[in-house]
Length: 581
Image (cartoon, one colour):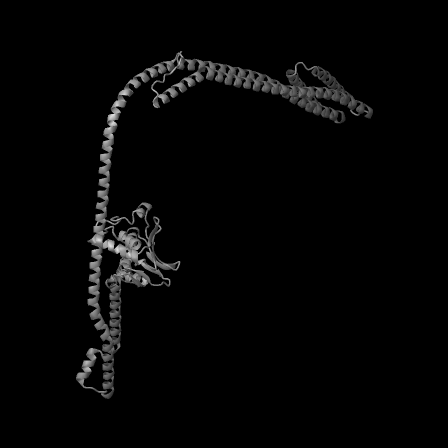
């Protein structure tokens, strides 16, 4: 029989037994529950009717006693008689087998006759004797107590009946639970039987099939399956054995061909490996040459720029020094001339008409007041030009190409002075605020011109970022903060921080790679930070860090030893000269 048929038949039998058990137990429980609920409801109604009957009896007795005393309750007495009979009839309907009902009816009939006699007696003699009244009351109370006694017995028996009904309900519930447990156990047993009769042989056969497949995969082509289940698995096992035989035949042919292919493949791998290695070396050499060429071009540009800046600074410095040096003499001469004019005015209080007319035309008083101001502003302008020239010469450092001890703050200030035009406010945009926090630092050994170039690259990039954020995002209060400090008495640290847009982790990882730039085409070569990194790390044995997150600005940290290792620097310079040559 097929596995599918076995499973369907066993599952159908299993489902039928479960459905029959659950349906039978549910019907039995519903029937028992309905019967018990009927008994319980009937008993509760009987108790309610008995209690109602007691209330009606009490009202009837009270009305009858009032009639004995007052003689005005005939209609109410009849109503109570009728109500009592109605409630008694209802109680008899609920409890047809109760013997107390007949006794209650007889006692009530006696009470009715007694009430009629009392009514007639009151009508015959309205002023009854006290002894007669007492006798009537005793008779009424006697009948009432008898009826109450019977009703009490009836109520007690019904309360006990409720307890019995509840016990029956508990027993029925317990029986239902037992039946349910029995059904669950039967379900488990049927499931176990189905497992051992159908599933377990199937699992064993599949396990054998899996072991056979593993054996074939391991190379045991002589492995054969032995499955006799008279179903699809036996057919699969036979096909598997046939496939194994054909596979063994094909395997021997493959072994022969594989030997030849392996030999060819080995030769091909060696050839590919050689070509790949040669290509990688060629690409590395090409990248290195491109990088070196770009750096040489950049170095040549900076050298030419330095020469030009130094030449321009020298040419400007000579006439400016001449002007600056002669301003003091001019100031002295003009002061003497003005004093001489005052003496003439004192000696000649009434000059000629031509002189008076000339004095009025030239506004001598205004000239005397404005001329010192003009000389002062000329002196300030010349001083400013001298400072700019000094900063340009300090930045170029062509006369300090060798490693020297310098004040690092002079290089930073020279850089800021050169970039002052980009930092100050303009009519259509706000300026960039520079915050400086300089500590007292010793002079350090460095290449001044190259170190100034690193300051220029980093601060220029910060200005570019702040201008972009201001123009595109409307950023307010752009700032650049520069902080210097001495670490462990041997390392100088410079921190340059901006409050710009920051950068992602991906950009930060490529920041110091040659030719990498985030600027538009034509606005950046991608060599600035790469050269900066080489100047700090390679030329000065220092460290260069970048800390940045999107939207939180960027911080560059430069750390340079106060004293350099001369031997390593000389070796590095000789290597660079070799590369250039």
